[in-house]
Structures are given as structure tokens and as C-alpha cells.
Image (tube, rainbow over all chains, first blue to last red; front, side):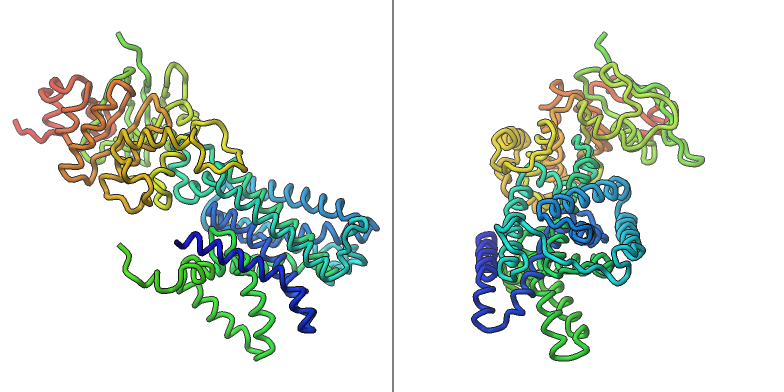
Length: 319
Length: 249
């Protein structure tokens, strides 16, 4: 039963994430708390991309734009002396939703390669816009004096509290994602990916539903951006560079498209390799590349597929 | 005289020098099974696509149930009750057989901005879908992935999807294409069962099926209607014989 084994993989992954702060403090390696905070932030970003990429078949190559908008919302508000976390996250959510609405409204009129190029172009426009904002540090980026403040109930300046704050967001988005992909809206998205022409022929006005999915994905990624700003206490244009969009997409494909746990595993594998390999050799990218190729080659459903279904099932004869 | 459900008036579609639809005026009466036949390249599929809204005609108009729908989109026409099958089977291959039909039921069950409740355990979608699967003889396949069905079963599934939208008008583009004699006979039985309950426009090359099922037949040659009438009359029509049925002298 691959489905129940996937649930097991998911629960094990979440239990492991829950234990990271205690383990790394015991081992005297607090560095891992920050690494896994980053992993969870990108897990949320990858999860949001997977909603439209894996479930909806919309290959958005500009997803880092929303990461940047969420992060800049926190950075710019802090710069102007506004430290309230509810304002930070509220603005991050609204701004990324609005941006996704505009970008989606225009981009979704195209498909295929054109859609990829337009989403990429929009993200690059925002990247250059951020570079040109000299007030907010331009190219050099913007230091954030203090993390978002939630009135003493939680201190995001503390690595462990910050870690669990991000963990709760991830948990919430996994649950919301689970509800969404099995809802009428979720099945509709998957129908669009499977056969959009058929969807129109049975009477679904697909554009408005795709746009809704696009906005949901952008908004969730905006939250990831606000979390990222809090983790780094710094934001710069590089957060929305097109290579970042590529990395997020790589995490989705690596972990397993059209799954919810996959993007989490993909973010973990990608960022762990990216942090561990450079210590072994300076040519670490020459190792990272082939590993990514191997995972993608050996499992159509990514790392999650490898863990839950194994390699044998795929190579074994199936009627 | 029964009222026409669908009417086209001097419909024209040109592709460069080729006139795919040449001043086609058709009246499909409520409840009839109207076959459209013609040699390859006669413009049958183009005509179906114009009726369904996938291709916009260059001139002329289409009326459905008394309203002009010439400018309506595919989805809008589907919502009005025009459903179609494609020449190349169009189903959701990754979905289960039951999911395929349930999604079509969902298309007619209000908007789908419903993000919370699991759709796969919603009896308002599943029960009608199961009933339709039983009608086309696929109830035993409900849980299988649609991609695993045989060719004939996939065609039947597409009919089930189309029926699930509760159409008033079915546009069927060669539903028997690529079928063996046994599957074809099954499809003829299925369509005979649908006759009268729903108005059908049937494009088909299988003449046995056409003459067994049709109330009226329209013959299309080079985008032009050369004859419309009862099957027996069409069979005897000299011009039709010369242009299409391959009869000499």
C-alpha cells in the first residue's frame, strides 16, 4: 500500500523536524537549527509551487518573486519602524496575493513555454525593481533590525522559538494543502492538468480557477518570504533571482511533484546537500548535479516515491 | 412541426483558400438523432468544433434553444447543455474511472470554489457518477485508472463523462472510430438507448451504424450540405451516391 507508506514517511519526517532543536542543542551544533529553519521555509515555498506545478500543471518559473515580496514586506516595514508581526505578515500576505493576481491574470492567458517565459520575466522585473530601490539598500540589500514582534507571546529572535514558529506554519500549510487537493477545487486543478480541453468541454471556465490556484500559491509563498526575512534578518534582491525560482522548482521535482510531503523532502535534500557538500570539495556542484539527475531518473515521483514505494516496484513488471 | 433545438444559419469557416464550412444551414430538431456524414476532409469535425465553440466561424450564426450562441465560449455552451465527445478520446487518464465521471457531475453542480470538504466522499457527486457508469456498462471498472481501460471502454467512459453534464445536445465526433465490430455494436446499443432522451448530432464513418441509428442524415461534401433527409431517402439520392457512396453510373 504505497499510500499508507507515504503517510508513514510524512509522519517520520515531521517527527524528525520536531526533534531537530533538541538534538542539535544536545550535540552542541546549534547551526542545524538555522539550517532546518531554512529548510522548512523553503519547504513552504516548494509546497506552494507544487500546488500549481504538480497539481495544476502550471509551470511557473517566477515563484521566487513571492518569496521576495514577503521578505521585502517585513524588511521595508521594519525599516520604517513598524515592528508588529501581525502587520508584517498581513502586508506580506496581501502584497503577494495582489502581485500573484496581476501576474496570473496576464500570464495564464498563455500556456506552455510562453507561460514559463512570462512568469520568469515578471519575477526578473521585480528583481530589478528591488535592485533599483536605493532607499532599501538596492543591490546590497537591507538589514532588518529586529524580528517581527508578536507582543511578547513569542520571540522570533530566539532560534528555537523561531524554529517552532516556522514549523507551525509548515504544519498548517500541509494540513490546508491536504484539504485543498482533495476538495472539489483540488480535483478541478488536477483535471486542468490532466486535460484542460476536456475541462472546458464539460463546462468549467478554467481560467478563473487556475487564477485562484495561482493566487493561493503566491500568497503561501509570500508567507514563506516573511518567515525567511525573520530567519536571516536581512533581505536582498538575490532572494528573487531567477536561479532561486529554479531551485524551488528543483526541490519540488526532487521531492515528488503532486504530493504534499515531496516538496518538504526535496527542500531538505537540496539544502542539506548544498550545505554539506561544499565542506568536502569546492567542486561540490559537480556532485550535486548528478545526485539530482539520479533521483529524478530513478523515481518519477521523486524522493518520496523512492522512500515510500522503493526502486523495485518501478523496475518490476506491472500489468 | 417540432421546434429546432439547434440552428445554424449560413455558417462559413475558411482556412486560406480552403472553405471548410461553406454556408451551412442546419436545423437539429429536439429529440432527433441527426447524423452528419461525408468523405474525409468534408469539414465534419470543423462543423462540430464550431457548434461546440472551439472554432469561431467567419460568418453566419448559431442558435441554441432560441438564443444566439455564436459568440459564447466552450465552457458557456457546455453550461447551456451542449456536450461533445472528441474524435480522439478525451478523458482524464490519470484519474480513476469514477473520478472522471464525478468531475463531470461537479461541472454542473454549481461553482467549484470549494476548498475544504473532500470531494471523493461527496455522495452528491459520487452517486450520480456511479449511476451513469452503470448505464454505460462500466460500473465494474469504477476504481481503475482510466488509462488502463481498453479502447472501447475509454470511448464508453467519454460518453459517460459527457452524459454526466446532463446535456440537452450531444455532439459525437466519430464515437466508433478505431473500434472492433464487438465494441461498435456495444456503442450502437448505447446510443440507441440515449435516443429520444437527448438530442444527438452524430458524425460517423460507420454507415451501418449511421443508417441503424439516425432519424435524419445530412451529407457534407467540401464544406457544403448537398442533402438532408431521412436515411432511406439519402441512400437513394443520386447526388449523394455520386459524391460520396462511391456508386458509378
